[in-house]
Length: 79
Image (cartoon, rainbow, N blue to C red; front, top):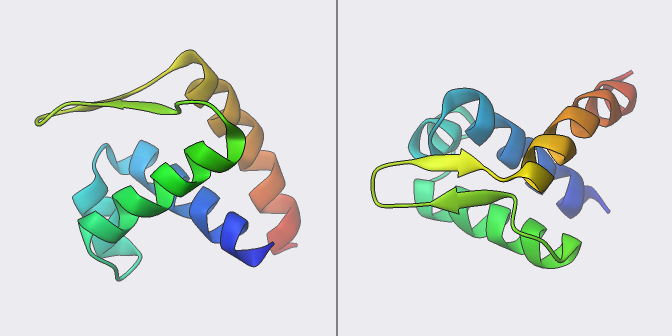
């Protein structure tokens, strides 16, 4: 279960920072690892959370909903 939680944290950091590079740097991992962990999370959930291009990433509607719900879940886990 903790792997999923860590993947959610990577996803949240990427959304908040706007990039895999920044998320990776903040979490002490490469941008490739951050991207991989988000892809694993998407596979686990069975939906696309982010659309990616070479220059940008954007939340999908499912990603927006998942992000909003994840805030409360992560805060509860940290308490």
